[in-house]
Image (cartoon, rainbow, N blue to C red; front, side, top):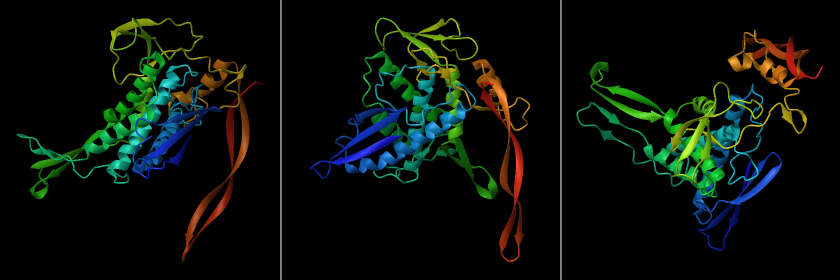
Length: 356
């Protein structure tokens, strides 16, 4: 959760915004100074989009990791500043990137819809390309605006001279660039009798699930960074592992694959992931729901393998519980004019991770 407090200064045109970020019971209080501390009060309107975008990112994070040991248990916003007490694992790298993407996505959408003050989308991008019978139309300014505001909110307190801060900033930017990489191009033809004498093309935001899938693939190929001779722009050694994303107990050795500058779209981390089967000496996945591998309703391989991943790999057994659920069914329309439904009792089998 991001709690935003507004403190009016004596000057009517100046406002101070304080953001309180809560994560797993920890509270960090930061002043958003780069863009907002002395910004016009109109900028406060962007805070709703920031919060909505952060929530969008967290919801997508929960979906992407629903059937994995680490299931994005960050119920509040992971948009930290320096966050010195948190290890920069590949999971936190994903969380930062998806929230940064959510903020950029929401700001872009709201700007192009005309919902934000001082967001200039009136000068539409209309460029006729010589020698080509097509025209660009759209609002490039909305995306540029979203990038600017997102950086102002999320990147304002990190010190890029510190390795952890540099990686956090890099993952924030990777999240923003994921929106650019997943934009789709749509075109409309113009001409007599349906011909396509000329056509107008524009960029359109995808469904946010597309962005989540894109970043999940980046997570699977995340790079372990080792800074040599200081920090960028000096050389960075990046590593990868064969197979699945490793845990700290996997024993898999890293192989150096690249020395040089990092790609802007790559996710990067500094610390190995802990054993997500354990949490404070207890079974972290105890009580988690799973799905049998032959369930016809399973939508992904991760869901089909969830009982093995969440239960058996963590030393737990799969417990089957029969429950009854009352549902509304057999609805019929009667003239005139009401709908009458029946109450039906349905038996379902629930699988959970159990000690017994």
